[in-house]
Image (cartoon, rainbow, N blue to C red; front, side, top):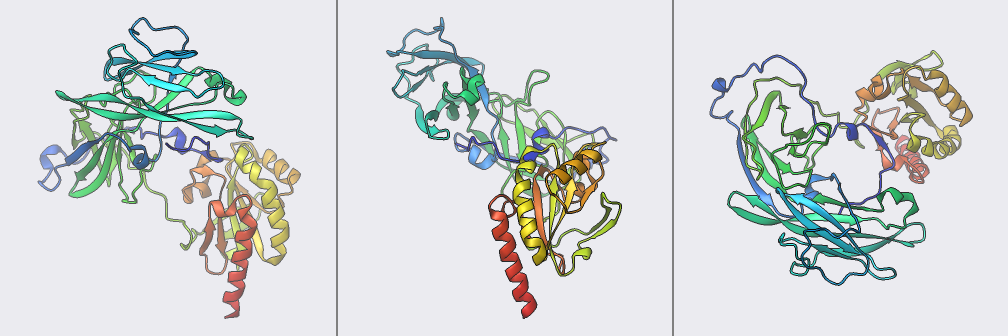
Length: 435
């Protein structure tokens, strides 16, 4: 079960879960021109459970619960406070019931064989977890299985579920909801233009139908994932594709064909040409920072990082509209006041929206952010943010002005980690200068 905590950052990737096709010319390479090496192949097998650990994210579906007893219910165990619902999976409805007696543990029931009887099925996993400031609330998490059709056969696949405490005042809108998501997928490899990649076909709608059909305006029901850069993860922006649209891998546009509800498909050359989404540069610790020149808000120019010889500089990507960013400001101001005399500088890169220059100046003045800022009013497309591949904020880099090397990046520069990171970096720089 993945953590249900909301990460304290603002991300553009959440708006771009599936790559959308861009208009363009016909693909210059026709099917007839494909050599034997170019012919795409697939080798996928059903993974009945454990898919979420490989996917890296999940898309929860919500089931509305009601105290009304369903007409389809033929037999049920003794329950004191039942709530009912139905899940449609593989074109068939399955009854769900949760009994939540006051002062006692809750129980989940699933009519996994679809016969209207809640007493003759394997008991689902349903475990309680205390949460809240003083652990006074109880969240339940677990999983159950439903049959997924594959041709004439069916396989029991895992569906994960969770429910917040109905008494949780911060989640009152979820009082009548059970959340669930698929923990199954097709896993294997695809070979495109002679290169083999790890791949997953995910039924993100958790409806037992891999065909990708969905109602207009609703999220895509099925996602195709290819680990293009081979890092063992699936980048939501660049490696997760809509099964109903063409996608570009290494300069060639492909599409899924003959995709069936039970997950069989083939890959073929697309007659359309869509743009490839490039990967950002590797700007992790130990790599070189990207150089740039820009105009600061005071009208002077900055040559980065050449202007910071002999110093350490924090390159801070933020915005006044970003709540988590503003939450980091007091700690950053405190650290700056302490470490600036010792050789630490900060250069802010604002991702504020157009016509927000006065707001940026006002906020930085009010909050004691006395270091320089670069602002071009381009929001997520701010030039320096694009250069550094920024997709979530706050995001900061600590860079050695002498070597241009990235000393730290990300979480070590946030919260209570910041001052420790700066002190360690200063000590290392001092030792290096002494040698």
